[in-house]
Image 1 (cartoon, rainbow, N blue to C red):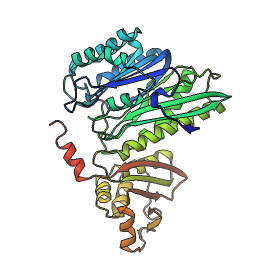
Image 2: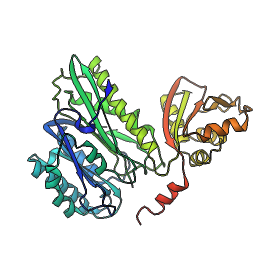
Image 3: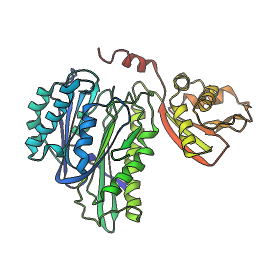
Image 4: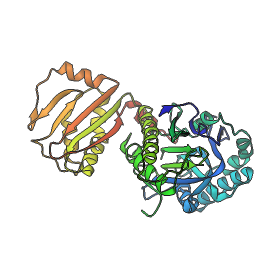
Length: 407
């Protein structure tokens, strides 16, 4: 597997575009389109927030047949908590794109991100759709990536290439997310800013295998990150597979499935880490590794608890190696924790053992927390399960951004 250029347009048969349609005051791009030459097998993972934007609910409807051919997304407005008109406007976005692309409206998926509670300026979007479709290009991924940004500073896109029985297969993706990030998504099926990820692939794969691969990928990537502990109303990951690589159809529990699944996990993890590095006001990227927990759920609880601790995040911003806050966050996580068995490492330095501190030079620990990349390891000593979470620090700039997000 190797990294290639092209983002969502790297796989065969995909085009993309992005432009400014008039939603953002900044006049930066605020509308994006991804289109496949062929109808795709499609699957989505969506926020578990009980408050959900109209685009989330409409996408669930459109994915009942597990098919899609395009994604249209706007930024600068979440179109959430906007009443019946919000649902009407999401459907209008889909139908406007479908009309220009000459496909069914139900084969268009919709996404919105931005301020909650503001009516969507749908007229501006509908009027821009003809130009958006005309601009579709095999080199359009970077423009689509720009069109979905809100408080992000950087485009987030990636593509990988690998071979399945001598057939070249590609996966590409774009994403956004810098604030209101604490994803907890589930794959669609029987079972405030936002994170969005759109994945394209030319792989030929069964619906069940695609669902399973996405479920595995998000639980090892997006569902492991937190920026501010706030779960969005609009979080989603959408995957479109058009089969144009002409590989033997991928099914579950095969070597080919493992290769595809690993590739999907790779791009999702890379993009999730980019979100954390690009977080609102962030100055540090932080990895929380939990080891030897009693269960996988316990390992995850502790990792997410520490990663989401405001006090830990403030200590990171201040380069204050306050490991007591880390221990406290592990203790209130709801996991089985034995404080006499727990060990905590800051970088490679052991700071807690046998229920008490390990003497270290203050300057040594200060240097660890002053770095741009910080690793914290918690060994619970009560089992054999592990989990990792990724987070950032809380800076004064984060407060400034979010104290005036609407104004």
